[in-house]
Image (tube, rainbow, N blue to C red; front, side, top):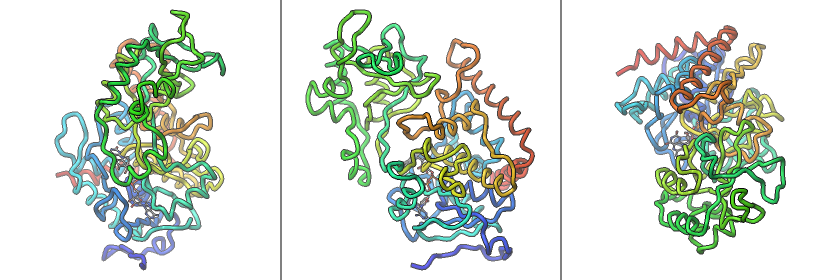
Length: 473
Ligand SMILES: Cc1cc2nc3c(=O)[nH]c(=O)nc-3n(C[C@H](O)[C@H](O)[C@H](O)COP(=O)(O)OP(=O)(O)OC[C@H]3O[C@@H](n4cnc5c(N)ncnc54)[C@H](O)[C@@H]3O)c2cc1C
């Protein structure tokens, strides 16, 4: 089918539009933000979106920036990671955030939007921008020139080959089977013990939660009975081939977990001098050891059930969950080995990636990486220094984590305080600690942005504010 070009009537036929300088593939949250960021800085863009010619399994409309599931962008409280990200996106002049504010619906402390109104607003803003040309076709090859790939977690099959070529063999995942992550400070250190199996590895790499027989049986029973998320058809196809969820292992027999992810061999509890009946291992997520994942606990349990059941694990009774386990189809690259801090593909730096294909997760994280990729493309065109945010900011810490070659077993990640470098001083009390993180993030980001008057940030801030004002209900 021939591609459909969308150019609103009355749009000036600028030379720039006729020879786009940057191609953005995918008109989701990341691609729409990226296209607008570039165009607002005077760079012409061709935005290629396959819908409605080719519809993906989760999208239902022809709108750009369609929300495939919830209509919530989570909390606005800046002492939460999601709220802090919003504050940062505000100071970076995010169009997606401005559109969310303009179409918000009452939702307590959360920023929720009128689903249709939000995507329709963004579609209109993009379509009416004189420097953006929207083309509706499925992209199946890598375009020439500066390019941003933002084809999302459900990238079309024909484009997966392009991503595989870009990322390199074994560096493209098609499935997200992530275990939950808990905050280190919420783990009861009087219960868990630090040790590596058979004493191997560098020092005591893991924390180990020991279980006696009764605790194990009680936990295994709760796991089997817990409520699961119903997989959509497109997920069910691949679910069990990719990786077994812990609850499925538990279902195969009473000892299955003890001979699987909970095996106690090679571990001695220093308090009893004995090998426990079963052990849940917790592996550090980062060098600062501020967050730990539950090894082998890919799970399809509903989020509330994960809290209830995994808090039965000794030492995790008060665990704070930084990320829940998920299992669903998700196309993403092994960013720590594929992308640099500007989201450029290390082997083909004229190409950047943005959104969920980078392995970052969440609506606003997608918009945020679209923004970062675009500002870095602009910096490249302008001959300016790369745009790299401080690691103490919510967005900076996410990108630092995602693109650090030392990040092992990369799994999709959303912003969370566990990614931030520890504070200089230990602060007791979660609320006070999070306030300190938020304050440090804002201070450092402001200082950094003050050093970058060359990147047109004031321009996008004003354009985003104008958009919000013009469309506020
Ligand atoms: C089923 C599902 C539910 C989710 N629910 C939530 C949620 O509730 N909250 C949350 O915060 N996050 C959620 N996410 C995660 C994530 O935030 C969203 O997927 C988000 O939309 C990602 O933004 P994106 O721009 O990377 O991708 P998308 O928004 O998916 O945009 C990618 C775009 O690229 C287009 N495209 C794909 N291939 C091609 C091609 N070859 N040529 C041209 N165009 C192409 C697609 O049609 C799509 O419009 C969910 C993910 C999935 C898969």
